[in-house]
Image (cartoon, rainbow, N blue to C red; front, side, top):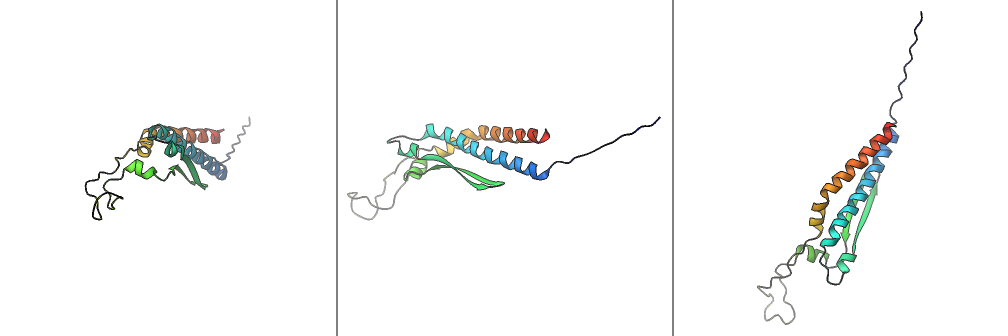
Length: 140
């Protein structure tokens, strides 16, 4: 009576694994930025619509180093998000002297930070799903 056993192991292709996870990472960054923008747009104060319409995402980088940005590039974007507070320069017709004490400025109407805060669970779910899918793909 003879027995014969053969075993063979083929390891994981590290280059293919790296590329799969890099692709999952880029997709996650893109989808997360889009999720933040989606949460942010309804929070933008609208007078003319210029600020809301200036919102978009930008993705930069390559490989494992990818960054996503939610950008509002209207000139007054920061003033709306953070407010203006007291200002040090006199406005035309504001009265004598170089300062106009007591002018309260514009109250902040935040939209970007609250949008990010409400999108955090979606961001976590996006990364979890995309990395899980990448792992399953590599296991086949």
